[in-house]
Image 1 (cartoon, rainbow, N blue to C red):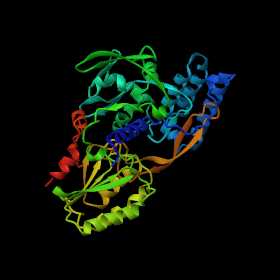
Image 2: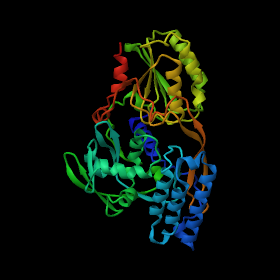
Image 3: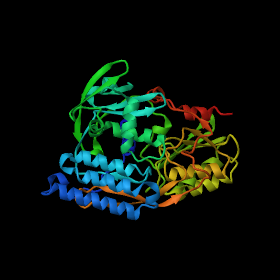
Image 4: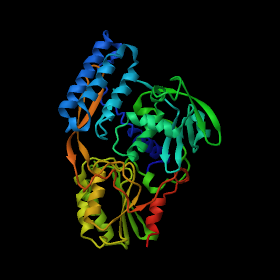
Length: 421
């Protein structure tokens, strides 16, 4: 098992990825700001973005008014001289996010540094809590953020959601953690007067002024302290870097499977992993099987097939024997797996609604803008595994995770399952 510090850094990495600011290459073209003719280069990139999205995104004209889309790009193009690069980037993110497709989004280049808050906060059912900080601000760990500038955190979230590609509010809540840490976004929407400092109001402390840190997206939280350091991590936060792992909870006769990524691990295929599960269960007393999808953002949905087939035809395919845990990071192929279990077994879904929308666009492809290195992702396929048009896959039994649960290392979802009769 990895150390708590390493596990925490892995957890931070997956939370950070929710903003979708993933570096695509270390060899990107120079940014428009450093180009000889900045306006012309940005104009070329903006035109390319528009033409490629309209040509390649499936059902583009049914997702957004083409005229409105073109007008928004034209407005940015004509305002380049009065905008900073980060303002252009955020405005482009807003336009792409207006399609409201979680997989269709825009990634900035890896060569640019931005300003970040020296904290990392997460949305829970009872508020927005600071779970990581730099060494200078450890007194803020476990505290709830009430305001940014003079605005309540709810108003901040409503504004920053405009730059987030999402299909339901559960995914927006998940990605808000990363967006809030970006000081450029806070300044763009009027919640900070500068890029160097941000004023926050913290519950139980009052107003504090934080100095920002200039950093690349890929490692802005490196070295931060976690509210969980020195504590025993609940199972869903252990071994986060592993694509899948399992453990037997002997006192409860429960077999727990963490499925964190829909891909085959390099050391063991998922089919072989499933065979090991079968062999263990065949020689041990197991009453319940739990599959935890809370940390799974997708991959290849067919990877799960061997386990689904096994459980579908096992003694666990009955009420009270098979449980699937879902949450707001259950997305893409992991969501399709949860749907498959719901449709083909008698499992009980437990946890919180999924960040992914059941009927949604997927099969993502990308293109890169020629001058800035900005990469845009778009979708070429539509999936409709369920009837109607629900915003989320909802659990059969809702069990929320509070900030205090997280801070104290509790997992009320697994506790519910272990005590389920």
